[in-house]
Image (cartoon, rainbow, N blue to C red; front, top):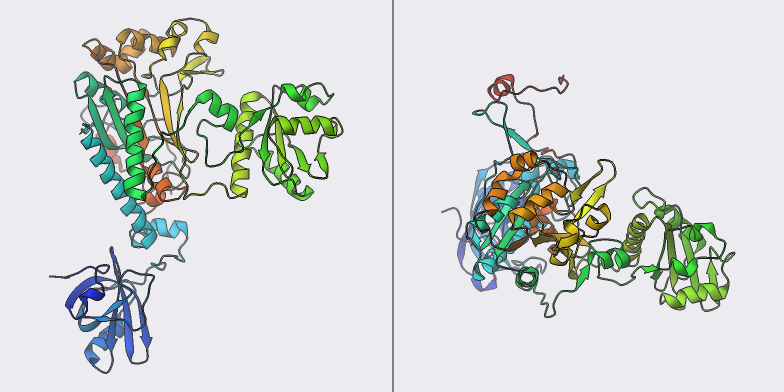
Length: 589
């Protein structure tokens, strides 16, 4: 056998045992007549020691070892004289009696250490080496534990794991599809699924009333830290349920993950907030509630002072930043420039500094001290606080003020990644109007049911009525990140046909794209609803990180490339001819 134990297994209780380990050489150190090897595998690091006075052959072999050599080591477990409390095996070492090189290695392009000297690009190119590092090992171990707990919880409450196809029909509504040419059907294409949405609904029609799948999904969209072209969902659906049933079931899943993976127990129900309130108080449909600093609408309060910036504004909003009245002019000028960035979109920033000695503001030319104090009092600002104000078009400035709120939370250290604040956001608009195309789009997807009380407006042909229809939808939000989203689905074929009509689909187009599910609903579809969690995002949040890449074994970069495989890549003409496709891309030199 290659090993009797792993490199993270041995303890002082094993002293005196003869053991065999196998792994990678992390480093070799010489101290006097003793040579030390740190041997690493997936489970940890164990120190090996060879005495030059005892075995010339072993020490000659030790001297020839390089970093990342694969070796087999046999020896006796002994107590370390100089203990290392930073590793689990730090009380013991292995006194070598045999040493064998299983495979040599060239020197790696970066150090395989907790903190490496390799940049992101080089580590992505040699991802298989980066995966040997402890931070990535911990990330993938966390992902494994979470997947295991998901399967345990859902199986224990009656869910059945069922796989759905990866080669499906393209339905270009929303993000772009990845398409796959069919050799056996010339000129026709499959699409890779953006989600198993229609399949899980068909499973409900088929009578499999509790389905789940930890499934790979694909979207051809622009990338960022928490987005990849291929990603993993915890995809779930339930029959004979209302919204409360779905929320209670999956709040239970989240609580089980917090408890069993992180050791954090939530005894109270997660807060719930409407989409409307989320936008009003946080400027975001995925609010971070780890800290306060809620937004305040002060539009009516500031009118009539001959200050056009506020008098003419559709919306004026303010946040109270606690304890920051001492901000200097330089700091406020820097913050003003920050809100003018395109990512924020404000034209300027108004401040009110509420100090014990009085109130100072960038608008005190137009507002008296009493006026400013009244504003502070109305929004809960006290002595020592700083009030920041933005004004302009409502939707845009609510978003800008929400972004400013998050920035101030960052600057004040209020967004602690070890603190978790989950909540549900409910009652989203069902539809959103696009001025450019002059049509409605589904805010979630076209299978989301309207709230029952809005059904009359749903059948109205008036744009203003349709804009007021709320979806029976919900998002699970954690620390300012949307982790999951779902809805009660349409299960009546007539309602589904009406949805396609509202979205501007002709009957022929709706039948061509979605006829299979419309027809399925005619055969007794039960009331049903579900949710899908972004598993990669869930893992990264549990790991206290903003990027999802470390929680995916082989991720893509910001341009969707796998730099390790050099993919995507061109295919040869013979393959293209076989698939009946031609490329219009410029030839590469």
